[in-house]
Length: 566
Image (tube, rainbow, N blue to C red; front, side, top):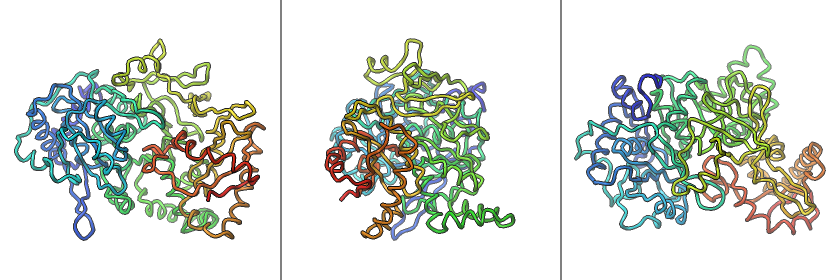
């Protein structure tokens, strides 16, 4: 299926699959049952169409102005996508809200986006922000509960659609019409509402079709936040364009079973999870023993397949990673297993994809070449500038900011610094605004140093910082397994020596002004829930720095190479 077949919007794509493969399963959703366990429900293209069209008719009956904003808040679920489709079918604009928002940010988005109605989906207040979000919802705002909603006192999806006939003549938008407003998860300030058109959403799938052989036989597991453009591009847009099967999960405790149920052929993840998979296997069998087994001609293949099966990745043919760099050692471990990790790069402003690594052409440390239709250049300042078919319409209610982030000839200023090789593969070298100055007046680019630290298997996340300090230093969050094994003084002493060696090794590879004075092992996890990581698990640098920098003078005074936060 190509755009020449008049499938120029994701709504047209949906109608194509609804008509041609109505009985094929599109969405698979597990539901919790009393006493534990799951009840798994499959929804065919025809069933999804029936439910979405019925809800679209209900939305039309509310007499909202055409193009009104309708919000969706909740973790990923089959009905999250159905709600999105219903909003589009009825001629409205969808506005996703992250399920981990605090009350202040949720209230800001509900007001700023002019949301007229809110779908409340899968939330429980345990590992999401529901207890905060609910306080920000105006009492006058109409609500609709999706299955697994925490609100039973509002009109429910199943009840509403049972009283409506399917809407036969759905919205038929043009490519350049506004379809969604995606609020960024930035580390500072108010989030910006990135406006995307029907055309920009579809363009990502069109571009990827020229690089990967997607088909309606493929399978994906959706678990990264659908409120973020990366998951909407990788899962929602591509599944609607190619017609493949999407699985959803229960919660963190069921993730491995959910993954094995889906048996994905395409798997999109972020570096932190790829690293966790690697660490989980290393915890069961040491890397040294793995290398010995992998060197044996007869059993090597069986062993590698057993590991991939254990992880639920034995059917994966396209393994995609993005949002941050992976250590070379981790990339090579997956290569040994026969899984080539393909980096992708993009921004919310170009719907998540501008570059991707082509199979067989991966260069470690690079995020790939521009996808078809994308132009990329490096400005004199070192900033990456991109022009893409997936480019945003602008920032909602922020025309000055929209203009400021574009060059006179229409390139988007990404804010990232980078360089390209002879094959046009792009390497991200940091953020334009991430450079900080030490008290000696020297500028430090933290990302390249963080990448070197990330090669240590025991370090899950790092943040190199030190503005105003004589030399930079690094904050380290250890892997979960290691955090549990260094609780005593004796255990810490042993690992301290290991970190001192790491500090010496990394410092030997950088300029004199970049040499780190010391390493700090932080005591608390950095997570999405506590605000230290974005939904794609990048560090929120300014949030981290505001918490830890006040302690820097004390740490310098200790004159230790490794500091354990008390």
